[in-house]
Amino acid sequence: MATTFELAGSKWYVNYVVHMEDFGKCDPEKQIISIRMDMNKQTTEQTFYHELVHAIMFTMGKLNHDEEFVDTFGAFLHQYHVTKESHEI
Ligand SMILES: [Zn+2]
Image (cartoon, rainbow, N blue to C red; front, side):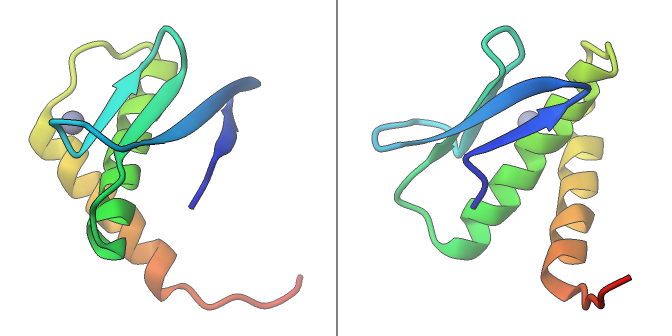
């Protein structure tokens, strides 16, 4: 799982948190994604991609997020990640 990544030249941090009510959280001011720790791999990854979509949309300057859009887009990003096959270019 990612611990840091960059969007538009800004660094984001991914924290895995022990006691958290929600599955995940996206803080656009601190540029921190928090992920609840006690979840299985599938849910952890899906939550990360969900929060990543929030992070991208904040970076795009969009402040109002449609949760259904975010969830579906995140699920497809996750599916891409899981099913992709690669070769050297
Ligand atoms: Zn959300």
